[in-house]
Length: 307
Ligand code: HSE
Image (cartoon, rainbow, N blue to C red; front, side):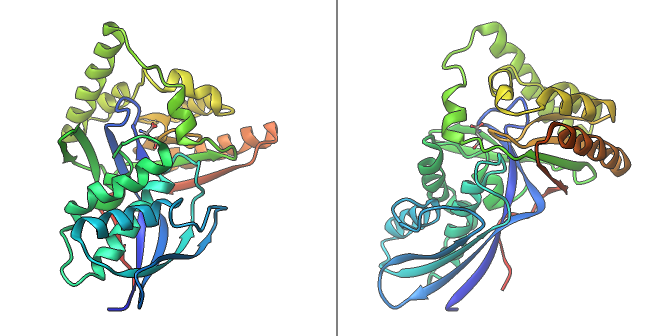
């Protein structure tokens, strides 16, 4: 095989109570990466559509992640990368994680002895860490592997999959402001008092149980964040109003997606999602703020070969 086209899904990280700890893959929202072998040993970014990003391979998450993989296995090989972004960086949907995951997945497929997909996670993490200035896997793990992933430990890296709820309808609301993960990380508190930490642990434990039991009222109660949401919501125009609409339409979970500005909302009925979406659309139109929507499901499919 000389060339490969891969889709790497967008992801919802944190899921309210799991800052840097949990995230799930979305269905139908993805980044496309075409990787082709070169005859020399260079990593070359041929094009990036859908985002104004550097083509310098030392400054791009895809090539940084690919280089980390090639260095690890000690193979001297060169590749061209063509990236098409169907969701913008700075959206809160894990754009840099999708690039990093898609790049290592595609390059690995073109190697003589490919590693297992799960073995690629540390290299995808290298790319993501460059973009967000922090080592966190809650986007990159579900984008690479699919599903709903919980990271128990970063050193050593230890993660596991929660059951996904593909019967739930996921509404993503993305007002058109950009929030850089590196900046949104900077405003999160550096320390917590024990009462706040206890509330957060309780919610996270409860969310895990809710996903196993498919108990959506418990899920709704658990998707509550005492760490990032209180400081980050001010970066998102209309956050409180959108949350109110989602709750008025009986969502079973609402919060910031990753570091925002996208917000996710979970519904058991697609009619409720559609009603909420219409109201939110009217709200942003009245405010003069443009806004995009994605309707999706949680997905157990991570990076996959398209051609
Ligand atoms: N867990 C990360 C954060 C996700 O909230 O900063 C964004 O990449």
